[in-house]
Image 1 (cartoon, rainbow, N blue to C red):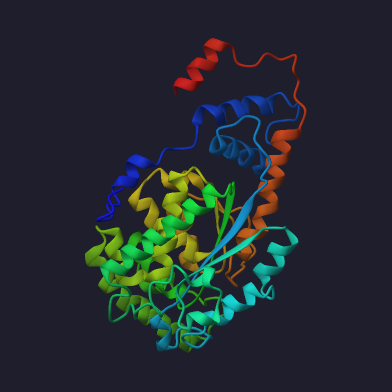
Image 2 (image 1 turned 45 degrees about the vertical axis):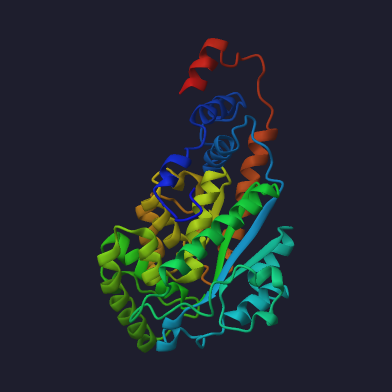
Length: 366
């Protein structure tokens, strides 16, 4: 991609679908285990998806997963759209880094390394490790109801930062990303994106957030999304401008991260409404990209269900988890690992012939 400007159309050429022929090989191998069809339910589909993503049959076990969490504050929180005070997302980040949050507990239990990327926290960078803050674009994103959340240069910087993080993880040998977010006001930004991209009214996508807001706060949040939606509709044809208008730095970086993960053939488990909203933007950029992403869970936000429906993504779990930080996606990780282990280790009947060289050549050509 050009160093002088960011052309999102390039992703359509760079992103390929997971290897379809190898998925069919994985399906054929599964038939030789002797288990009845669909006896393992969705675990069969997961194992085959991983085979196609890894371009390998049998699939490799998931050995190097990574929890990557993008963090930022949003100016819209000043309107009282959350149970948390504006500018306090840094407290959530500190809890994760200190091992005291739900996501931290699960990551520790599942032995998953954690990486936090500060894109727009409203705190002194000196309060956090330099590795966390090195990609920060600004202190808090703008108020989406009344102003652009980012300038266009800031949006490009954030998007490129997300791409760089994806490259760093792929280069480090990460074989599966668990994606999370930590923010105050982030579900409001996500709601505005989902409403704009799905063509719905603000009330349809406005939820209660991670803190289960009361009715008055819900009405303020709905009004903010409505005002943001009015500003978003005129720029729907330009996804980077859309992110700059209502997305904020963390959501913009997550979108760049997701698309570059697809370029690098790194599968991703999505978490809540924020990652789903970013995936929806990514789908508009490159229609093949969602084949690399898996919906880990369905939370309680109506915008989350709306986004997953538009993505044609069937969540693995429906536990209503809304605490963020990748918690719901982490809960799905053992299922993905189990699917990989079963696909790799179940014995197969070697007396049944595998695909012939001619059949194999035909598969490889498709």
